[in-house]
Length: 451
Image (cartoon, rainbow, N blue to C red; front, top):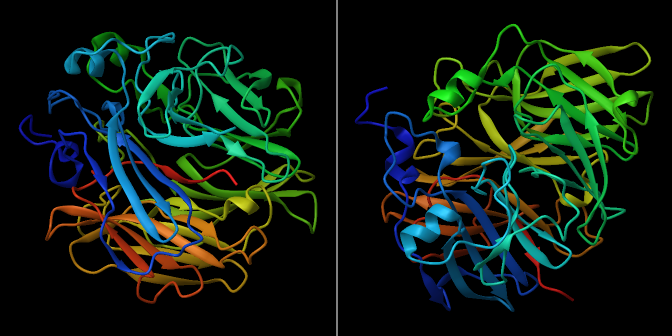
């Protein structure tokens, strides 16, 4: 790649410079009055100009974007840098309180609500960063002294028990830390799971009874780390690929490993215990390889939705492709995480992770019928991750709203678009117009107001 061009510093990947507060945002359509809460989204937004020859999308300083919706109005939009030592220095502020763990000081991947608190989170050893309701940085957090090391970008919340499950890693740890957090957001169990190398374990899965770990061949590269500048995880063709299954209250001794064809997975759609037998069903977005030829971002081929059925009795894994479209950022209704699901949502991509202009659709999958529907936002409009919000706590699995931030190249701004879950191909229910664009980024969530 030319030192003058880096796709992750141009177009809608380019950072925005200003922190904005906008009140009483304009809306096209009618925003459902039941949507009372905050839609939050995290992603990289370099606070200083990085070297385009070595800048990796995953390493930029974090910026959280958020909208407060209430009673049919969009009360505010805010975007704030998540403060770390570099951001604080550039902005002339004191550095945030709390430990910099393992040299990792960026929380740019996800933003979640835990026990009435808000956290920006990332993998690879960094602490979560606690934010205020208005997205101001409070501190680096160890969950009130209970988190032994770093956290993850993708904890899984059990919708029945309220527990959080996480797989945390750092290159200096002897293995992967399998964590359980109680509903109050405190770590109640930490088990070290043995792995032969230092895998980049971006995500994990849970079922009603089990946890699932993905030990895949993107491995910590000490030479790159020592050289500086380069993202220190890369494809290792000789490492192998396997799935680890253990009881949710299990330890290292309880893990059963199942070999699969070499590949990489950032994000599973969902996992569940097969009611028809002693099997675990995993639906994942699968890449043939990752960080092999292209080291500045996830661009070693397009991903697709696959289903892996782990037969615990036979000790085998059935691997089958569900769809040939290039998709990413899979989501289900959070009420069915770890349970059999019918519906799933993904963003469709044109080339690898390119969400700029050509990936203009969201896809809704119906697993019962084996069908899919597409919502096309039109030329020059690029949606990000879709988040589903049920109409009521006991509504049907797709009875609610699908939200996504959509970048419009004609205006160079972004909108929060709200679709009807059961009329997915129809016109948006509402479009909230933001005062600026939201750069292509990673993950977010709907955090309802306290009731």
